[in-house]
Image 1 (tube, rainbow, N blue to C red):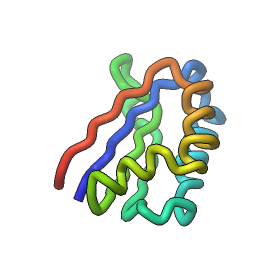
Image 2 (spheres, one colour):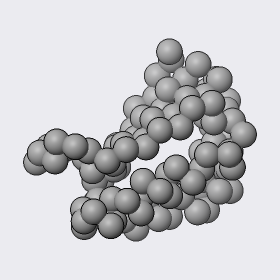
Image 3 (cartoon, one colour):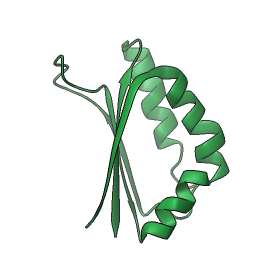
Length: 96
């Protein structure tokens, strides 16, 4: 199984923007069949080094993660909003 974790630092981290980003990420639930697990949450510490929103997903294998990356809903709907809303995005992928 592959874990895919992404952290998002928003350009304007207001509560409404954080909620909109979190809701967009959660909107993938049920739309991408290769997703085995999906969590998204807002940072509660809010320190200077914190990112504002975290995404945690799981996939059966690397091929499913790669299919997720190019799935039309992810690539054409979710990614453009994330890029427009964020000043920085970092990710880590690992086997679990």
